[in-house]
Amino acid sequence: MVTTIQRNAHTATCQCGQHENESETLHETDRRSPAYVRWVQASLNRVGSAKLAVDGDFGPRTRAAVITFQRSRNLTPDGIVGSRTEAALIAAGATAPPRGRQPGPTRPPKPVDRTVRPCPKPAKLTSDRCDTPQMCPAVPDMLCMYDISGIPFEYIDSFRRDPATRLQIVDVRLRPRQQHFTPPVRDDLQQVVANLRRFGLPIEAILTMGSYVCRCTRNTNRLSNHSFGDAIDVAGVRWAAAGGPASAQRETIALNFGDDAQRALLRRIDACLRLSFETVIDYNYNADHHNHFHCDTNQGGGRRPRGRSTTLFTQEALNHVLGTNIPQTGKFDAATQRALMQFSGVTAAGLKDDRILNQILDGLYTRVAAGP
Image (cartoon, rainbow, N blue to C red; front, side, top):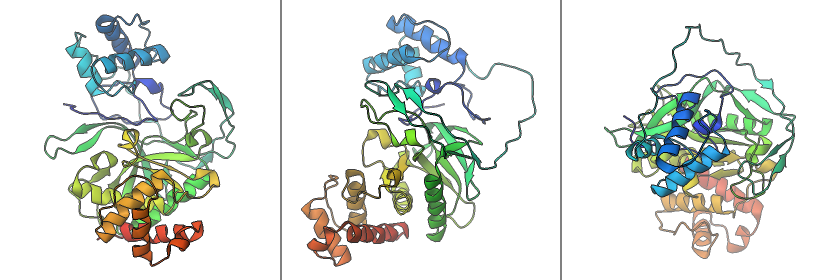
């Protein structure tokens, strides 16, 4: 039975419509089906007087009604119908949702061509999370890829709590799963895989929560890096059967950052990501990123060594390496600078030079990635 579900801000269940590729679904409920969406709409009409058309189309009015219902039940108002929202609808008087897929003719699985191929995206208008509609740029150098250096992508659709370990585990995954991004993201991911191997962290799958999507950063008119094919969201990894780290879980996922043993592995993964990607936003940043690492190349702009997302992890890394207790404020404050000077031997004047500071951060992250 599903007891807990948390979802990424860049993806949804009913909300995302038809998936682009063939997929394997490992759960009894198909929350992407029109039948399930019709149940959501009918349930919201019944328990919340939403006055929705019961048409199986998860559009803006349906999402807004879901958010209103979630707020009325003190649930995360993300517009995503997962197991908690589903349970709340039933508790409020909705009937049981449809289960399983509709029966149909049995077909042999469709072969998947895993060849890396260009898949350019045209410019288009988006209103997704924007205050006013914005024009997303054309992305002529987009790539479509099923794996990186032989490591496949698996798209994580939802999570649940394992009653035995009390840790979050994957509930629904889609595989094989194609991801869309530009060559710089591909190059950084290749380096991540290589660094994981180098530091004794070999993996056999990258668990993702999306890559290209044309949208704004929430409630702004600023386009997300995802709109440029410049980002990928990494929910976690599955360790290789041999040679991987000691772990109670075969899969280490970001949602388990509150568990000490899993946090130690997540910290090492985080460090490997930061040795390649210019920007990584993790569980330290805000609740929207508790279930994934947002990784982007800052569109070639380089790492922001004093930026909040970088500094939050730098403070965690310094506390781990030095045994200090620097408050994780995300501010490049005096305590953080003193710890960086202690770690590196560089003077305060040296920390003002971005080139030197980035070299120090690379050394710090390498130390964390290498483990105890």
